[in-house]
Length: 389
Image 1: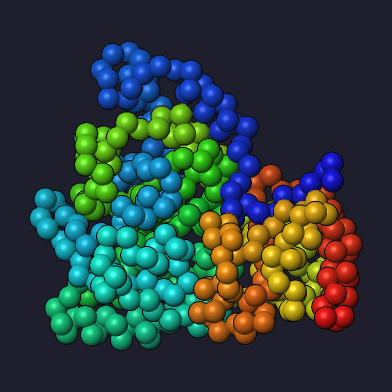
Image 2: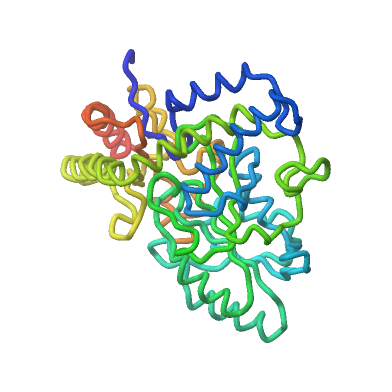
């Protein structure tokens, strides 16, 4: 228990040392970014440097970056019926989402409940494009503009969605597209233009920044969602309130580090995940690897031990020194199986037993070794209890 193994990066990543250094420096630097004196200008410079790094992380325009308090707020900013482009209204009548979205999107935020439609996914958790086409046809005939919000990669399974193809179809009907890339940013290469989306949400703490900072990146800086907060003119009038300069500075440094190391990290972390998955499937045939045969994030594995409640497995692994999650971290304490696995048609007996392992920037080969040691101690006992029951 003196040496724990952390495999829950999808919940939050350890803060990178360089990000912590930037956070600390900014905490001790006095100055409001809206002030015109020297201290204010220095704070503004730190924010603008971070803005450039976050834009680069998704291949976006610096002018399109709107800093928020996190990924959930970035989603809330995007999910509004009220948009403008170049000062002209661009209202959206209906919000379409997939059935496997994060709770930050599923609830629709500023859309009325009867204006939110959840589209089905296939058995691998990918949006059914035929269902999207059918919905688009119905709304086009009725003269309604849609906003589609489709996550780039699922937080529980790591499955990557067909965002670019979905965006092409929505734009052909005059709609707008938002993607929640909170889990994907820093783990796969992202180019907002190649995806063809209008807005993309990212979060600092998933990539080794400090909690309390996120961003909505707009492909077109002249596209403006209605602000969530009324107040001052910060963030070009798109997000009122004094910027969280220390967390933003750390976000920028983390984004730069993640971007610089991305190509090597995709291969390295993917290798760690594959080594762990191969060993677990070989040694414990009772473990079920969910969605192993689909394009997914290189860092994420979703397993189930049928007959063993996920919470029981997570607690047993935790007591043995291994940190993993049962579903989304922000849904801990929930009752019932994952809505993601339910939407995929996974049998309830398996869905109730699913848990997630996720690697990240701080993961090393020895983490795989220690994790395997924990599984070897824990899984046989859990399996015996299940057979006895």
